[in-house]
Image: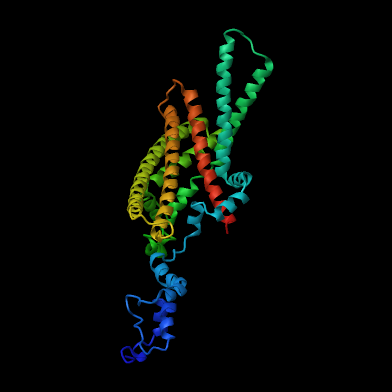
Length: 373
C-alpha cells in the first residue's frame, strides 16, 4: 500500500497539502500507518470526532473561508470616502465649515457664488420692503428719511455686487480657447512642423470651425460678457456694450438649453447603470446570503449604487439650476415685463443657492480627501 502514492510523483506535496487543508492531512502523515492519503483528493477523509475537533480551526480557515469568503479587492480611497467609513468620519471632524468657505474664496468662481448669494438675498429683502412700504403708503403718504437712505444704500450695494461679479468673470473665454488650442496640434502635427512660421492662421481657423459647438458657444458668450463689462468700465461705447449684452443673453439662453439636454442624457445613462446595479443586488439578495458570507462583488455593487445615487442627486441639482437660469434669462431675451422683478429675484436667488451648494460640496470633498490621507 505504501507504493500507491509514491512521494516522488507528488513533488509539491507540501504546498498542495497547505492548499487543501494542510493541518488536516498532516495528522495522517505524522502517524505510523504506512497508508498515505492522496492530497489531491476532492473529498476529505473520514476521521474520528476527536481529530475533527482538534483541527477544526485550521480546517475551516484553509478550506471554507478560502472558498466562500474570498479576500475583498483593494478599494480606492475615493470609494471609502463616499461610503462613510470610519476614516471619512474622522476626516469630517477635522474639516470645518470655515475651511471650506476659505477654499471657495480662494477661487474667482467661489467668490462669484458667495457674492451672488449676498446680492440676491438683498434683492429679496428690498422686494419685500418695497411691497410693505407700498401698502403703508396707502395709509401714510410719507416715509422717514432714514428709511429712504437705508433703501438707497442697499440698492447701491446690490449694484456694486453685480458689477464686482462681472469683473470677477473677466477673461473666462481663456478656458474654451485653451480647449480649442489643445486640439490644434493633433490633426496638424506634421503640417505645423513645416509651416508653423508661415501659416499660423489657417490651422487655428480650421480648428475653431471644427470645434464642438458647446465650446464655441462658451467662447463667444464669455467674449460678449467681457465687452459688456468693458462698456461698464468706460473702455467701450455704451451702444456697443448694449449690443454685446443682448448677444450675451442669447448665448446664455442657448447654453442653458444645451446644458439641459446634456443633463438629460447624463441622467438617462445614470438611470441605466442604477437599474443594472439594482438588478444584480436583487439577484444576490435572493440567494439569502448572510452578511458574513456576502461576496465581494455584492459589496462593490452596494458602493457603486451609493456612488451613482449621489451622482444622480447632483445632476438633479444642476438641472434645477438650469431651469432657474432659463426662466431668468427668458425675461431679458424676450423682454417680458409682467412680474419681471419678482421672478428674476427669486429665480436668481434659487440659482445662487443651488450652484453654491454644488461648489461647496466639491471643495468639501477635496478637503476630506486631503484630511483622510
